[in-house]
Length: 77
Image (cartoon, rainbow, N blue to C red; front, top):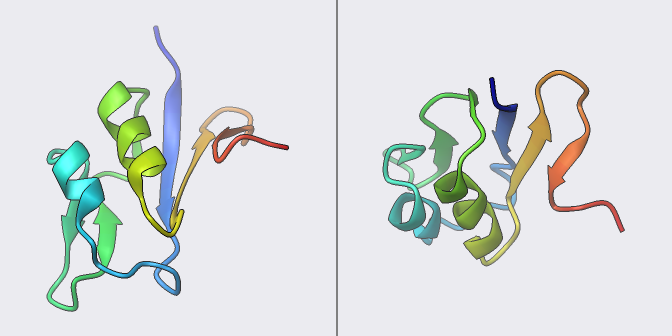
């Protein structure tokens, strides 16, 4: 069994660029205010969601390991 991720979007940072929806159409939704939110905050690790986090122009998306809370993105410095 693979890793499970906790996905969060910081709505105070989100600018509604929709890059997350472009990279992971099954992983993110925009609400009526063009704020992103994860389609499912707990998901299996996958490349599309990681690409969405990496592609966010304001780094509003954080991914942590569900089991340990260890950061996946952004990586610890």
